[in-house]
Length: 364
Image (cartoon, rainbow, N blue to C red; front, side, top):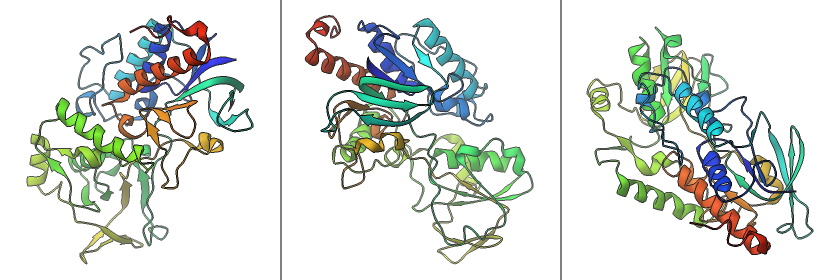
């Protein structure tokens, strides 16, 4: 039986694996990392090719090996895949891929103690603890609007976007209030598309510096909901949109001006709640993602409010499950710290359950 299985080899999963290895857990014997992707890079490997490193959310350093200064014009997907690949090799992390976890079940009668069984595409694994770092990329959120099924044009999600050039000469409605929506609008305009933007609320542009104190405020805001057992809001709902010079120009040019909430789709376009109409050839749903946690459903971790209650990274309903990439750690801001916290929590639990771990795995 394994001591820990890390599910997911993105930023948080790799950080967790790094700290487990540094604290004397032996790769392959004591812990493994399972990743559903065909290669390194986590969700970054799926990002659209036109998303360059310079235009992406900040790619954070993994512990013990800085990213360095790659070409900001290189696709972020290539940079991060190469970086993560080098990281896994440098620290000899035991990543098994592609391995998809279908479900996790408890081997005990009370459902909250004893070993866990992971039912995977490579067979069953038994472990004392899991660090779940599956993120959100596998769960694109498609909101419902009247007329959605009747719209005759193309509909796609951020998850499936590849190039703005595909929409040259077309009329595109972008739905969503986050950074991806803003970047799509600018790219589509530059590629020769006509655009309209729909947001449920006025876009939250902010000129405040995105510094360490801002980051702490964001984490406090998001963490308050997970501690209450409520579903986490998107990080951008707490962060706002940085009012860069590029975005200021987009607002001035009328590109980054929302037409307000969408009322319904029709056969050939979109009606807004203000009574206006936009004839559209395509709708790009930049409406975010939800946590990819279906495989944990058998453990019944959710609270009546619909979320999973956390104390730090420990699930309150089942302390064998350490959850990262959820809530405040669902962005690059806190993922590495969450990975470290999960590793430390796992090692503490192992030390409490087995005296032979004490003293050798809890070093600073």
